[in-house]
Amino acid sequence: MTRDVFIAGISMTQFGKRPDDSVKSLTAAAVREALEDAGIGASDIRAAWFANTRQPMLEGQNTIRGQIALRAAGISAIPIANIENACASGSTAVLQAMAAIRAEMIDVALVVGTEKMVYPDRPEKVAAAFAGGTDVHDRESVLDYIASIGGDKPGPDRSLFMDLYAAQARVHMDRFGTTQEDFARIASNTHCHGAQNPKAQYRTPFTVAEVLADKPIVYPFTRAMCAPVSDGASAAVLCSRSALRRIGAGRAVRLRACALVSTMDRSIDDYANHIGRRAADAAYEEAGVGPGDIDVVEVHDATAYAAVQQIENLGLCDPGQVGTCLQHGDFQVGGRAPVNTSGGLLARGHPVGATGVAQLYELTTQLRGEAGSRQVDGARRAIAENGGGFLGVEEGVTAVTILERVA
Image (cartoon, rainbow, N blue to C red):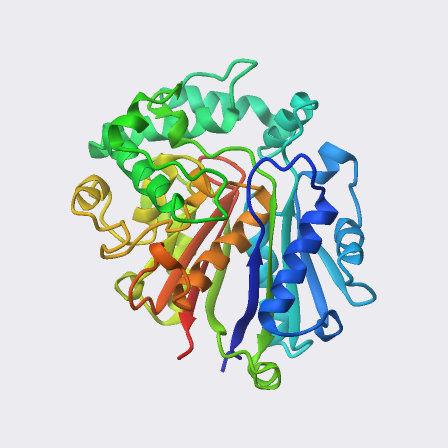
């Protein structure tokens, strides 16, 4: 029988452009708040996992990042593992900590995701860091893929990933009849949710018309449909059932499942074997639940198209039906399965290594009934999809995590 793992404490810093902060200061703030939320001290932590992707390229700190950042946060001597798995680094760290607790190697773990990405004086390094999310030895295959599905090869001042997503969005539009207005509608929902999140990078609500009228990036995307570059950190205290009894954390949330998969060779139009679908199916099977059991959702919306794609992959609606569901209000707070109540990557922000843990912060807050004006009434089960990188015809890695209210 699989041993239960719980989130006893969790935190998230304000996301955004934070020029006066560092990886160390962001980590220290997140760790302090997570420990306070769990009601424990640093000495109660038995091991830690630290997720970060950008510090090696942007600062040159290419090794022992976790040991350095956590030492400044008062965590030392214990086992510390450094996790880099593209945008899914935070979720991967959660999975590793879960595995250690289930194996009874430890009973209390700390997971931290921290990213410092805003460096106006280092644009070339920032661009190179994003390009490193693909096979740097075979960049031409990515460009050829974009061109093969009708996209434009990115120029010197264009984002490779935005062009990738835009080309895929146009394929989806051609195959399923999805419209630019559908992307604008999901972006509008997300920004309106983010306006209710005091820790979001952007808190400006957008109408559908305002999303469509925003600065064009690459068709069909406008700026409001694309995630920003962000700084921030998020931390979680995970524990076993026996440790939970000792801690006495009455606001704990159970981690029902965490499934991590990598890309596979498939045809472009084989959506049934999309990495997001395979990760979702594995998580549902592990948790013993299905899409109809989910009350609140966080997806990795690096773009508005990505939100549409992952809503489909999670089985929340049939391919091509997201637009209709959006018009019915299914994915808004108050709807059938609210999506990205945090504001998602589009509004909450996307400090890459922190994103996976930040998604769980939002879902834990929802399951605790502590989300204020964005609260989903009666939320009992929640799901997060967190993907990263690009390899072949899809993300290089995707994690899907399912949480459940204890009481």
